[in-house]
Image 1: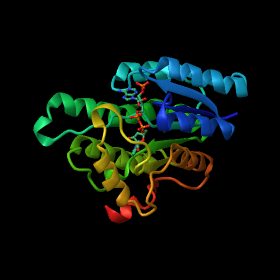
Image 2: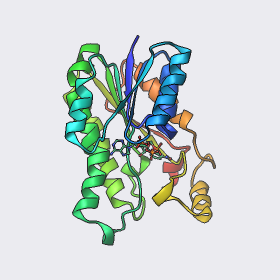
Image 3: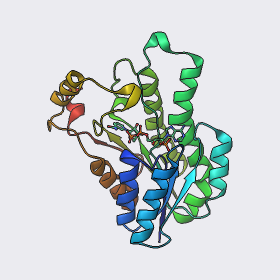
Image 4: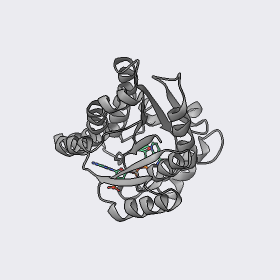
Amino acid sequence: MKTALVTGGAHRIGQQICRSLHQAGFNLIIHYRTSKSAAKSLADELNQIRSNSAKTIAAELANLDDIEQLCQTITNLDVLVNNASIFYPTPIADITPATYQTMMNTNLMGPLFLSINLQLQLEASHGCIINIVDIHADRPLKNHSLYNISKAAIGMMTKTLAKDLSPNIRVNGVAPGSILWPENDAELTQAQKQSMLKKIALNKQGSATDIADTVVFLANSNYITGQIIAVDGGRSLNQ
Ligand SMILES: NC(=O)c1ccc[n+]([C@@H]2O[C@H](COP(=O)([O-])OP(=O)(O)OC[C@H]3O[C@@H](n4cnc5c(N)ncnc54)[C@H](OP(=O)(O)O)[C@@H]3O)[C@@H](O)[C@H]2O)c1
């Protein structure tokens, strides 16, 4: 039985990635930061389907000590999915060293040091890393420079680690377009949502399942590394 670690696996896209990998036969380590009860109830649900197939682990991924502690608890691993991230506007005038650090530590440092600290386990299993990037890694979203920069960096991290961790570890990415509307600080108005939908060739948002299916495809592939697959309904055609 293969094992996958999914960061930020309690809600939204991460939760669907956990469900789809589990359905594809993987055992799950569901990482969470604050969403303990959602992570536990997902693990309970998956364990009802297959006993001892899911467990949870907590870590603040913007903190290197937490990352090290998390990695020390993992002995066998086949797939690391770097899904957890933060997203909100950062107009240039609001950027400070602190806002920069928060975005970069969460969206880049966490995935990088998880990959480095889990290298031995992934080499032993000839496993893979799948980074959840964003189509805005290539074409920036206005007023979101820190997020854009962090996603461009994890896009390059995908390619550079594919080279440096070869031949025993494959490293790929999935770049979602508009899948689930942002919440809280990043919430959009109806007008902004309509204007975004108009730019998508397929005229609709994708679903978390569209992203999860691509993660499962990459997890099961043998001969793909260093690639980032856009799952965006053709949004990048009109960016
Ligand atoms: N939603 C979209 O349409 C869309 C579009 C393009 C790209 N993406 C990418 O797809 C991925 C999933 O998107 P999403 O919208 O489902 O994500 P999300 O709900 O905004 O966040 C996923 C999880 O990340 C975790 N997280 C945030 N900061 C963390 C930290 N410092 N340490 C540990 N965990 C942390 C949170 O876990 P807790 O709840 O446990 O705190 C959160 O539940 C992200 O990489 C995102 O950039 C999404």
